Image 1: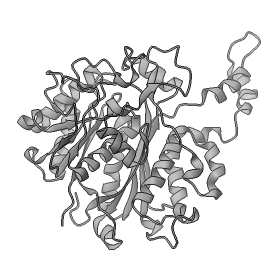
Image 2 (image 1 turned 90 degrees about the vertical axis):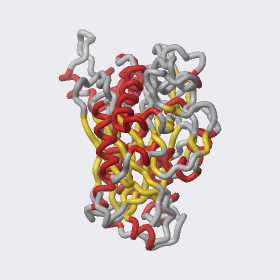
Image 3 (image 1 turned 120 degrees about the horizontal axis):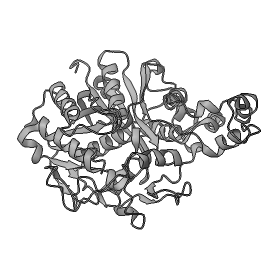
Image 4 (image 1 turned 45 degrees about the horizontal axis):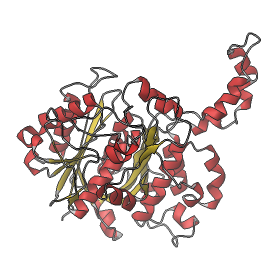
Length: 446
């Protein structure tokens, strides 16, 4: 990391099934409240798994200027979550961006240079609106009653709105965020599954380090809470199918009796800022992003490497980047997907990277509380890490009753634990694709 341009966290914008804002996430975690319930966004009765994490109260007019409300009509759920996160992050960081000024919430002019404000946002595979798509497909049937590409071209496509595709392009999360907040510095989109947020934040830190921006909106968002998202995970055999009558207990990270994850929706956008820039405007500093590491393990697109070598490599790189040793790590924010093989692989990677410390460092996980938020998972976990550091408290991993001895980790469960935390590593990996990433967050100090 470029030590001349240090990157600190000055804002948290979090949207999860626990509620809107970082405080809702933290309160839900320490109070051990589950946000997983029977799916209400659509009828899940035809699926083996019928539970998930669903966000309530997301009203887009609360997060964009009045002049931009027409554009919300071409926002898929993933985009809506990202735009809400960006608003909450800017507000939390006390930024005077175009969005907040036009909404009349702060008085202008901006307190940042738009030409030095960038964005790096992780996105997932945005699923099409089946109701909207079904109408177009129904008019694409030939005389034999079969789908016809020719008929699709002649009539089917005309039954979609002209801007239909703009709702489902992965880069549209960053597109809307940059337009709304007038972010003119480099903007990038990363689509690497559950590793997307960490990779986006890492790229944002590098953007600041090389002098291309002073401040970045970064993280990720995704909604897997739709029929196609549920079906994909069901076909891959990753979902818990034994808790339809007990949604709150479905996802059990690292637990000896875990049997799958649950889909969810959510995201987090973090304000990462160059230290001197943050100090000059009197910003509150949550912590410093002092290390970043990434890797890829292409052993299999479907199953993880049992030894977690990609995860181990990303952790080692992040620690090296932060000039940190394993003995200096106070907390691990693990992904803890809740499937048997992925938890074992992640645990193996952590132990391989940290050596003897791997079995004793406290580990926290959020999937039992909010489910798998896809590309948004990493930023949510990172926010939870920052809040744990701020409160010197480790929230428990919900539904983890007895840690699987094969995992060999010190997963905090039961009740929150008071602990002095100065350095956290947050891990993430893509269950399909093999990408892995790790970030090191340290308590800020001159």
